[in-house]
Length: 478
Image (cartoon, helix red, strand yellow):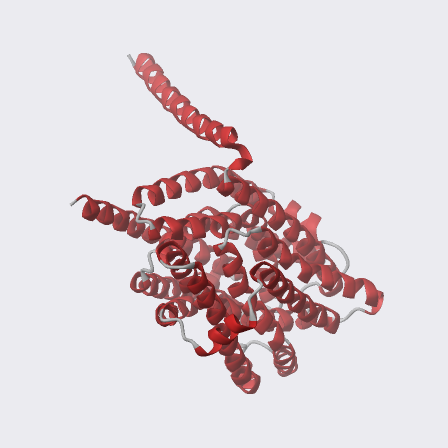
């Protein structure tokens, strides 16, 4: 009887697996039948390809930086300053651009394209003013911030971080504006330039290193980063200007005729900024707490994040960039079943690739780090440290992808209260778990903390989205 029972269970499992394979095969066949005539499919493929190319240049740049500086104090100070400024740019970029895109889609669908374009121009102006204000404040506040946060740095290392932070302030402003300009392009389903332009940053840095040769130092990396982000922003501006071709009269109206819906953009941007400040501060918290550990821990976490970003560049990044405007369009049309179907199908396909890729990355971590970075100043000991942390960090990738997709729907729904609650829970959980796990595991504990937080956040976001969609479907039927 036992043999028959086991055989029966085996047939059931086999039948279920066959059913799943047939479902996935049917879905992929439908995609291939539509081919690249499907704008969403072609957009995803294009963004994934361009993002992969950009990441390839970034990793060449990272390999050159690793060979030149290893996990030295100077690189630690640079990555601390760069990470904080990138956080601020992303923080502001998670405010106005996030609230702008759903409103822009709604105005184009329900009102007029001219008013939508006026909203876009005014959003860019407000965004630029906010970045200039933050940069001005930070220039004077840099010594206090570094002295308070980076308590594990030596006095010389703190001074170096302050100087770099001040010199990198234009980077924050250019990088921050790129969020707004890219959101405008993606809202119009123009994904090519918005995705390809970031490659200018690592390319310019590599040119600077090639120019300086053996005399390359930290200023080579710093000035290359500044010029690269400036060219990135100017490229986006040029493409928008050539496609938009606004008249002087229209620009004058944008300056003095306030678009009424801009009030809603700013109003919704405030909770998004607070939520972004809470949620994205996880990166700053990780770097800050890593600075309390042995020297080089900040750089170790930085290298780990770069490796994990390879898989995210092929999954979460193109999916969120391409799907967000489509989610926003469906929400504007109140196509709730379409939102749910799109979320399920995209999550299933991405996770079927990301989950085995994450497990493989965790298994081959030492080999991956050795191939990418172990040369020059980056020693075998550095490889061992980074690989140990990467084994834990790789496990967050599937949860990050699922949470990122669900969060796009949350933003499209403009559910600001939930975003604030979710971000607060994520920050508290991250800081608490960091403190507990880093006591015995060091930097690896910080990576493991990120896995747990991503899992918690993804679960809460998915449950909220599905409940909201079901409630709206029920309300429409009644």
